[in-house]
Image (cartoon, rainbow, N blue to C red):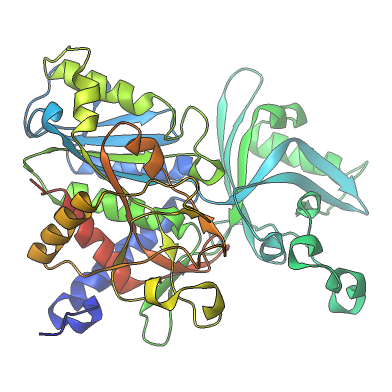
Length: 449
């Protein structure tokens, strides 16, 4: 019998794919920054019966808790058997490429006010001009009061943009490479034009003071992110795909979240990690490289009555881990950068990547064959539709994930995620069938023995 390569071929799951996709689009629109994603994950988790670990003294089988790390990364724990026997861990990231507002950003020139930005993660800078933008984040007044800022994503909000040259005056720009046509210091966001008694900047600061109670100096301690104002939408005449910002890696994050909240009473202790800072190399105290996961695991073991100082190391070394991150799908517009025999195909299921890295597998975690064989057996038993792939041709480029960080604990780790078109662009594309496949694969993984 020929192997079924796509959930599109299974008529009995079409309603499930459609329903899952609608929920996913809502998640995308509510999670445009890592702070917003943590808030939405926590809301969904609490509704499903997860409690804050800070409010729990003892844990036993069947308990569900979460740990919020500084509002920018979060973990879910489903307590099963003793974690020292090994856990099932799914680690995804909730940050995405964007523009960060600089500490001294606001200036006026030629009767318009602009904000200076510093791009975050790997972007093609020209893609961020002449599109609608939103600003989300936090600011702090001098008295310590935190102000949440959300402007541009609601249909009633004003939006922002970064201007580009008109074709009539682009002779010099057009002679440059794509990378040089728009440089980082030109990614200045247009935010105002109406003058006050003195100038535009003064009028804009007065407006911010009235609306938010903030002053210019408050920008120096703010954390404001500029992201696309687009909403996630169905794509194609057949509505078979989803276009939206931040699907790297919120598609895997949402699939992981749903796999956790939709199932209960699994044999192993299961952990979902939603990390920050992956797009800039997993550095900082909210990234996968920080110790917050080990610290949280120590607290969980303590609440289970286990204070053995070796328990954390044993638990991690005996664990199975999915590094839940996206990969590139074979794009018919750019076949020259892919090895067609080893490229993920849109619609053919979640993609398993034995290794990522670049060139001679630099910076990768190369998964062990024994773990891959065990995963294949489990997926086949559960009817999960999946495929294998790698990120482009050898020497064409490459990419990395958090897999190598978790592999350093001794755990068995492999990358498993959704294939995208236009990865890292302001509008990324995924197949609804692959999104659903990712969810089914993660749910299957959580029941491995």
